[in-house]
Length: 485
Ligand code: GLU
Image (cartoon, rainbow, N blue to C red; front, top):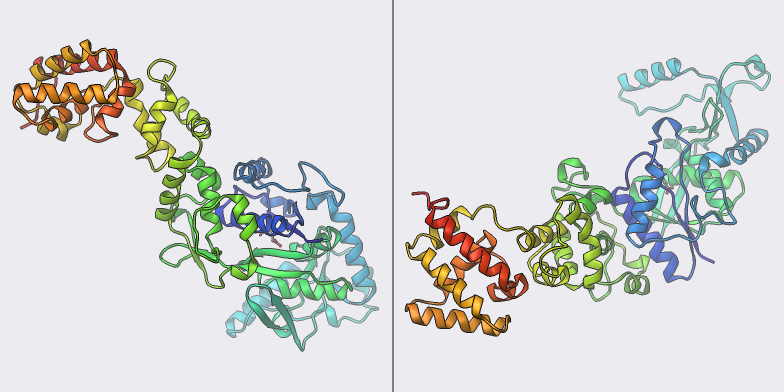
C-alpha cells in the first residue's frame, strides 16, 4: 500500500510551495489508491505561530485536498503532531548512543562559534571538529550534568546516494555531511531525526517534498541505515521561482493560499494552476478537474528544472474558471465579497442573472463584484472620459428622455424588443444606433465598458432603466455633469 505524507511546520500561512507539495502527494496517493497523511511538524517550538495549523488545514481543504489521517481526524498511526511523538524519538536516540552510532557532544555554543569563525577565516566550510567524538569513554564529562547535544557519527569516507524518483541518482560525499545533531540540548529531536522515525512509524513508502530538502536526504538515509530501517523512496519537487528566476518572495505578490482567496482567485483555478508548477499532462492539457488530475498524475512527468510562477497565467486560468463553474458555486464564492462591500443584492435584479452577465468579462471575484455593483447601486458619478465623448452633444438629455419615454411603453422587456426601440428611435432622429447606445450605457452604469447594452438593460429591468435615464438627463441639464474642457 502506497502511503505518502505532507508534513508542514505550523510556522505561518499555507504558502503556494507547500500547497503544491500537498497537492502532488495527494494526487500520487489517490492515483495509486494509496493513503495520504497530514503530519504537523511542530517540534521547533520557538517558531510556532498560533492558529497556523488551523489555517493550513482550512487552506488545504479549501483547495479540495483531503487526507486519510491527520491531527484533525486521527488515524491508526497517530499522534499526527510531531511534538507528541518525542518519547519515541528519544528512545531511538538512546539506541544509537548505546550502539555507538551516535555520541554526546558537550561543546558549548561559544566554542562552536569560535571554531566556525576560525574555519571561515581560513576560507573553509563550517564543520564540526569531532572533538567529542574523540573523547575516551571514561572521560568524566560523560558522568557530569553538563548540557549536551547528540550527534550522529557520520562515516568520514564513502558516499551516500539518493535515488530520487524525479532527479535520478544524486551522490553526496559523506565527508561533507559533518557529524550533524540528532537531539538538541533540551532533549527534543531535530527535524532530520524526527522525520525518519515518523516516516518509518507511519509506514510512509514515498517521501515527496520540495527540492530544498534534497540536501537533508543523505543525512536521513544515514539515520535509516544506522537504525536498520528500510529507506523509503524519495521524490524532490522542483523549486518554484519568480519570473526573474529569483526565489519567490513577497515582492513578487501574493504567495499564500489565503491571499489568493482575498484577491478573488477561485480555489479550483488555484489548484489547477499549482498542478502545472512542475507537472504537465502527456497531451499538455492545462485545464482539468482534480479527478482528471488524479487519473493522469505521474511522477515521471514532473520536471527537473525549476517551475516558473507566473501570476498572469494564474489570472488567465482563473478567468477560465470564472466562466465555466456552476453558477451556484460562483454565487457562493462571490457572496462574501459582496458582503464586505456592503452591497445590498436583496433588492434589484436576480443575482444569478447579473452574475451570468458579469462573469464573462471578470478575471477575479473582485472584478466580478465590481461588475455587479451597478446593478444594485445607481451610478454616483459618470466616467470622465465617457462624459467628454458621449454626453458632449447638447441634445443628449433630450434624447435620453425620449428613450426613457419609449422604453416606458415597452410591453415586453427583452433583448429583441429593446433593440427594436433603439432602432426606431435612431431612425427617427436620423442618427446611428451607436449614438444612443453609448450615452445610455454611461447613463445607466456610469461606465463606458461592460456587457452588451441590451443584455444588461434586460437584466436591470424596465423601471430602473427608465429612472436612471431620467436621472442622467436631469444631471446633465442641471450641469452636475458636464464635460471638462
Ligand atoms: N516540516 C518540513 C517542511 O515544512 C517538512 C519536510 C519534509 O517533508 O520532510 O518543510
